[in-house]
Each structure stands twice: as C-alpha cells, then as structure tokens.
Amino acid sequence: MNKRAFLEGFLTASTVAFGGHFMWQRLNKPRSLLLQGADAGSQASHQAAAVASTETVQPAPPRAEAGFEFTAVDIQASLPSEGLPKPAPAIEITNSIDVSKLNDEQVAAYLRKIRNFDAIFPSDIYLDPAYESLLLRTAQHLARVESYMGHGNFNLMSFDEMLQAGRNFPRIGAFDSEELNFLEEVFFANPTRYGFFGKKISQEITEAIPRHDVAKIPNSGHFLLKGESLNLYNKLRDDVGAGLILTSGVRSIVKQMHLFLAKTIEANGNLSRASRSLAPPGHSYHGIGDFDIGKIGFGERNFTADFSSTEEYQRIARLGYVDIRYPTDNLFGVRFEPWHIKIS
Image (cartoon, rainbow, N blue to C red; front, side, top):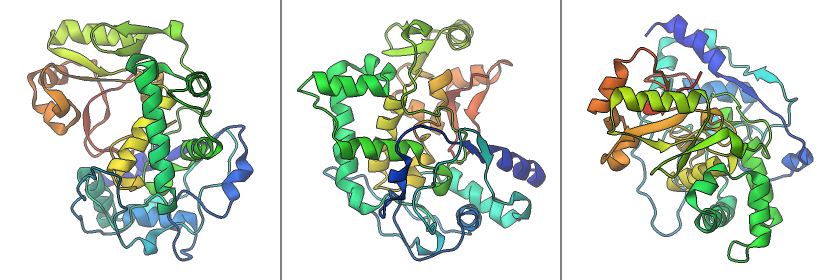
C-alpha cells in the first residue's frame, strides 16, 4: 500500500464534527464513560499512540451468556488524561494527530487492528466498569421498545418517539434520568478516543427520519430512503438476481444506539473492539442512505468476509457503478464490510 496515500487519507478520515444543545456541563462531572488511568499526557499524543503503537493481538474473550465481565487488559499507557471531550461548535474540526510522522511500522500497527477487528489490543479503550449495570439496563430497555413497537418501526424510531413510547406503554416503561444521560454521553462522545475515525453524520440525538421519505422493502422488515438508495437496490436486484436480499436499510439513531450498546456488551465493554465492527451512533451512514445486502440462505455469514466469496458478491464486483463503504484496509478504523453498499 502506498504510504503517502494512506497518510493523506488518514487525515481526511480523522475529521469529526460535534454539535447539540443538551446540558453539556454534565460532561465535566468527575466520572466519565471511559475507564480512567494514570495521567498520560495530551489527548493528541494518546490518540496517536493508540494508532501507532506496536501491539500483540490477543484472542477475543468468549461472549458472556449471563451478564459480562470486563476483560483485564493493560491499558494504562494509552489512556487519555481526561474523560469525555468538552463540546465543540457544530462545525467540522480536524484531529490533531500529525499523520505525516507515522512510519511504516506505525501504519502496519493500525492495519493490524482492523484486519484483526475482533481481537483485543493493549491500547483498547474500555467503558468504565462502574457503568456495567447501566449499560445492561439501558440496552435491555431499548430491546423492550423494539419488541413492543416492532422491528420495522424501531428501525425508523426517533429519540423523541422512543421517549414517548416509554411514557405511554407500561410494558416498556419510561426512561429514567440515568439512562437518558448515558444515551446522550454515548452519542456525543468523541469516538476517535477509542479508534473510530469516521465522520459525524448526525449532529443531534433527536434527528428524525421523515416517514414519507422511506419505502418499505417487502419480506425484509427494512426500509430504504426513496431516490438514490431505493433506485440502486432495485437496480442491483435486477442485475445480480433474486438471490440478493436487503439485510439492513435505513437506521435511526435509536436503532444504531441499540446495536452499538449490544456490540459493546458482546465485546465485554471494549469500546475500541465494538467500534471496529459497528459505527457509533451518529456516525452511521445508514442514517442517510447506505444499506446492507446479502445472499438468501447465507444467514449470519452475510455479515462476515465470507460474503465476498459468494456468487452474488462476485457479480456486484463486476458492476462498475457499485462501491462499498468500508473496503479492505480502509481509513475509518473499521473492518472490511463487503456487504455495506455506499451511497454517494
């Protein structure tokens, strides 16, 4: 891989935006979402260290069946010196890592992480264990919303609609202040702290998907945005064949939040490991048109690199008008996703 091209692309991919009108002073409270360590210097140097350090891949711990325990990993040398970032204006700001100073070994260390996305590394950042019960409780609460309101409706549900559903339906129950604070902190946190370098797509946690802008895809339980997304999917079906299916369409912030919290639980609180497989809420292009495709009968393997070996993917690869969002060795800190179709 051309080193200069990688470094230039890394700078672009490290751009992130912040916004919101919530109670930002809450972010300055003593305890943060991130596991705290010894005073470790400036934020920029530790972001660079997380990318640049030479690390040994460790096997991922088995998924816990009842609750979970946080994996003990030596992360003291790479922790930020403070917790969640202070708010920035709702404009794009560039990460301060000086990518021009990364050498070949440091680039290789970054690539090692996304090629071994489900492994654990010494510089991985973890959720503070004090939030374990709150993480589980909030994820379970979101699961009740999805179960009661229906999978399809949940894909489009806004934050305000989630709150209303909790207040109106006793089987769901109202979200309490701790849960709401937790959801806001996860949404507004800077994910470059734990290794995700994609752009912030949605600036406000309350952003909603207009129902009149989407079309339901039969036999899928998913929706696509009308226009480019829907047209591209229909064209793919025509060109690739009926064996191609929609596995995930447009996702609301609430849906992406639920997926990210579930992935964090699966990763035993390892936010870095979770973000290598799933964009944090507010950073998913599913909110503005991207969609996932798969092969009928391929099951969960549709969400693995195995999908790239299917006849359907091989046909897609020969089409000149299709791009995937996260190719191999991409610059976003995300694993290879051959199923994720990019909308321009």
